[in-house]
Image 1 (cartoon, one colour):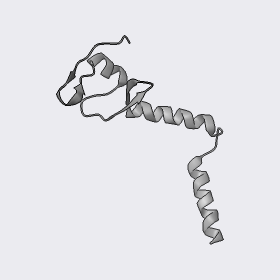
Image 2 (cartoon, one colour; image 1 turned 120 degrees about the horizontal axis):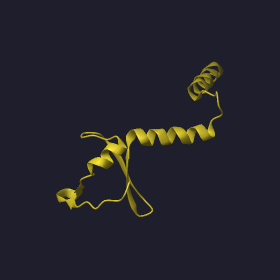
Image 3 (cartoon, one colour; image 1 turned 45 degrees about the vertical axis):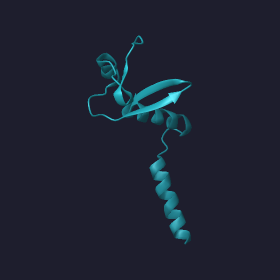
Length: 82
């Protein structure tokens, strides 16, 4: 999507154009994540941020490994040692 010019209004608010909101899947009242990356303002939907985090985890966790199951097993071993 092409960059668009928007104005900053009172209180530092900016209006995200409707087409961009639709592309991001965000609607009125949604919470978004905002950060500065290399001098640029980045706005992401919470859903997209979660998808990215999951993708990063998939790169570090072998296929078929359940982290929750591993954590539960580890806690049980610790409890048995006490």
